Image (cartoon, rainbow over all chains, first blue to last red; front, side, top):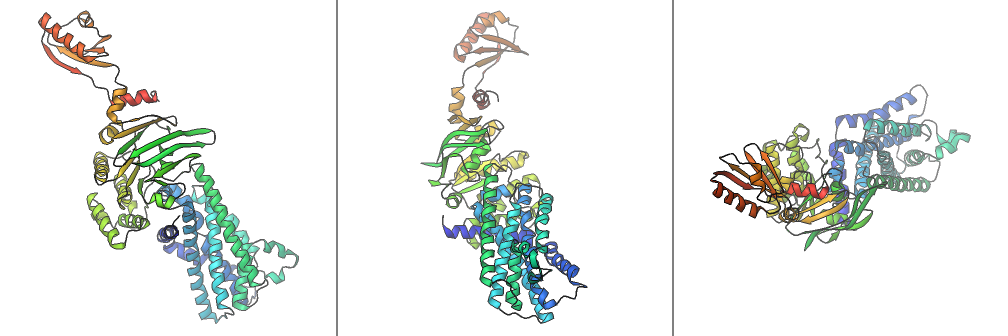
Length: 247
Length: 305
């Protein structure tokens, strides 16, 4: 397979997703508003140190914005019958999956960068390791966009069913990822957090912004890398199976 | 040279064998009609040929490129109008066409020029900036066609391209197929409309219950099933059935003011009627022989399924 053709097909799938699913006022507002409301719910009245809490908030922001729309794209396209057209173009299943992930990751990265820039300007937040921060943004964006694409993969053509399953999986993750209760304060419950990939993104942001990461950065990067590969492969296997069954 | 090749394609869905060992070779410049009753395996075959579905066994090649091994390269050779595949409703007509053209590596200027040409040809220039969601079914189908032909592909696949369209849209689709064929595209289409296939196709393949049951030109297929014919005659004067039966017809039927004489060979029946009219001083008002239709051939091939 010609790699140039493959890259082009990935970029064009991402372009289509950005135009149709992400460049919408409601999507952008929801992407910003939902994590912000979650932040207020847990921050107000708890006397938390805003500087120490902000990296976890950014992690939650990136997690939600990258994974919010992805679960809907494939089911929506199957229902609208545009998925068949997409498959008939010069694309492969891999380029559709990677294009979906790229669009979700870009959306998450842009939204989180806006929030980080605003937070830095208003609250004079520190940035201990800029390069690590950039790596966290990119890896986190791709990891959770891949989660969104994985959630879109089972054979469901009703977007509301997909949203229910998606929220059922995503919402609990924010409670077991060291966002509202720092990892250092979890004691014997810390193992529950270690199972969540979001823990490693939050830890990477902690390390990059306030130099308070619990795990070495290389561990966080490795886990997020493994998560990306695992989610992409799982999405591919499920979608291949669906295609072979004609669904 | 075969531009579209299917080599022993088979596909099952659980225990249901949808396509059973189908081999097809469509030559450069042909318009191949792929006919079959509902559920015969037409769409499954076209999906395998276009790389949407992976066959259980067998291979498909487009312009000599194996679609299983080199899907991107093979798909760049074709434009496709899927049966159920519609265009993106949230994009404008022009955006749909331009976005599709990018997949084929067309540069910005040629994309724009070609899109303008096609929009004008399909009568959509004035609506090019409108969101497709506001379009009628016929207009959406025209955009679907525009997307398929924008790269001027060597191969054009159309799955039921005229289903549910009004007369104007249907004619436009058929004219577009002819035009693309004249410009050098090899066409492969599935249709329920047998007269449409008869009118358009240079070669026809018939599939039934997953198996390919016949391939040939429309005239050859008609000839193959050219069995029972009839001669229809009307006389000015009343004629008895016995007189007509004496001419060797194996069945004689009355149809209003006409008689229909069923025979294996029309020629002696017509000669007999002429001689009868001469002998009995009868005046023949009209005489006609039936010709076998592609529909009759299709019904016989598919067992009326």
